[in-house]
Image (cartoon, rainbow, N blue to C red):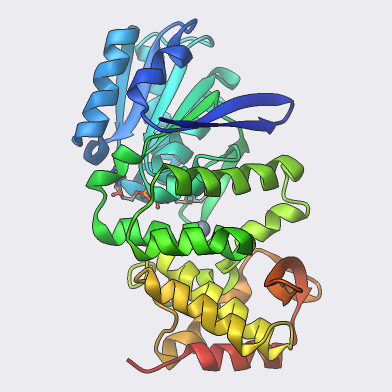
Length: 358
Ligand SMILES: NC(=O)c1ccc[n+]([C@@H]2O[C@H](COP(=O)([O-])OP(=O)(O)OC[C@H]3O[C@@H](n4cnc5c(N)ncnc54)[C@H](O)[C@@H]3O)[C@@H](O)[C@H]2O)c1
Ligand SMILES: [Zn+2]
């Protein structure tokens, strides 16, 4: 079985398929002059990665396999230059196809390489992490980092298709997997009607086809309505403002991105409660769901203070100060709003609450 969604963006529609990937790959390789697989060693060594590489080799002339350094180390301009040189040497042309297979770091780097190689060639995304399947590979944003800032050089360059195969997740390290559940829960907090189903899956430590497709559908809907992040797309930053502060406070090592976002979402609901937008029940419900997924809802007090100070460097800022993505109570549950201004005293109070010893 597989679930097929359609992404529509920049006057261009492409399929996002959640289900077995290897079988469907020929549909995307057809009509291209040469194919390059861009991936990383860890993914290529998994049974899933090897299966995709073999399927590509069977389908079409696989002109090159570009193995990027793992994670963020693969998202640099130096690596981009080396990769583009590899593509040229392998004889790739404007009518070639790049297949980006890996976590969000690989799909970001492979997507950006495709955006700039010969002024833009087709690429197919094959995400292999939970975060990749519900977030990074969807929406057409591609980028590499500068030493000074993450994702500082990038382009909007949607792929020709996204193949998200739940089987790829079997080899993910447990912490990486759980971390991705933080982003899964984000969709449940954005769409409370999805929360019971997503929370149950997360509690069971699963991310199956239905869950991945439900999350992808929310992201695609939001991106379709607001491709350039002028409004609604900001909702996808729920938990990310304080979350980025947490990541920075932990030196980008102590807490993963998904763990930081989990803490940031608990923070957002606490801030909303301090502001009278939701009640204690909503905070308790959300924290219960996050803890159920094995993710944290608090950090030591000193780290919480530091996170609060560091998030003021976040780029989602205006003259009014930080703009928040926060819930507000509705007849049945809550709705989430963007561009909410919060009193600094309320922010400090929420940070005090998130700071818990132990
Ligand atoms: N473009 C976007 O809209 C967008 C959105 C969110 C995040 N991102 C980017 O995504 C990146 C984070 O992505 P991530 O969380 O997937 O991390 P990642 O890509 O760094 O991968 C995490 C680790 O898991 C390994 N891995 C990947 N798939 C595996 C598998 N199936 N089995 C075993 N190991 C596997 C990788 O080799 C790596 O070591 C960041 O660079 C972030 O900026 C982009
Ligand atoms: Zn995120």
